Amino acid sequence: MNRKNRKIRKIGIAAVCSACCFLALAVSLPAHETGFPEHTLKNVFPKATGFTLRKKTLSPGQLAKIEQASGSKVQHNDNPLSYYVALGKSADGAGVLGTVVMVDTRGPKGGLDLAVGIFRDGTVARVVVAQNHDDPGLSSEAFLKQIEGKNAQALLTLGKDLQYSGDAKSAQAFVNAVRRALHLLAAATAP
Image (cartoon, rainbow, N blue to C red; front, top):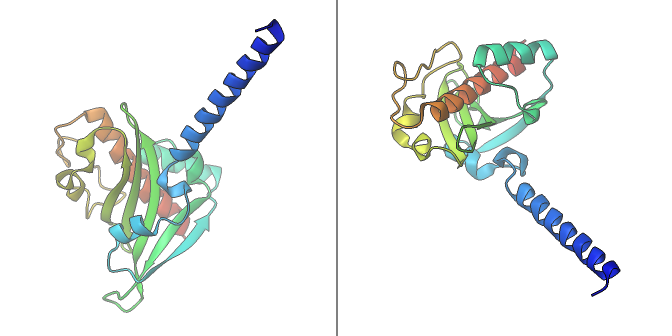
């Protein structure tokens, strides 16, 4: 094989490797970037008859307050914020069950994609782990149930408000992402 053919072959191999890397990244995009996540939304609010997508662009000042209050960096896909209003029969007849905010975070072992269901009073209805490439215990019902009923003002302190026997840094990243979801929605729906 002559020098020119070797160079062309190396370029071809590099192009194939680049394409494979691109496809691997495209496949691993967070759940909230891959279209309408109806299955995930129904897991958060199973009694919902439908979901309405809403979007809100937050100001730099609002984003700074959210980061400070949540202890979590706002991600590129958090602004504009896309959130889903869960529609259905509510006790007060308003027809709105709550809202779902999709957030992602990275723990020390890998990424987490969360769907945080929030009742109209600002408390957590349910957290669904759409993808977990970090500590498996974060997806356990025992851990997730402890977050239900909490709001943006709750401290959510590990070892005090929340019990978790797995990786503490992973759990802290998870809790901060839930806090970020609560603060993002509060800022987006503030008058």
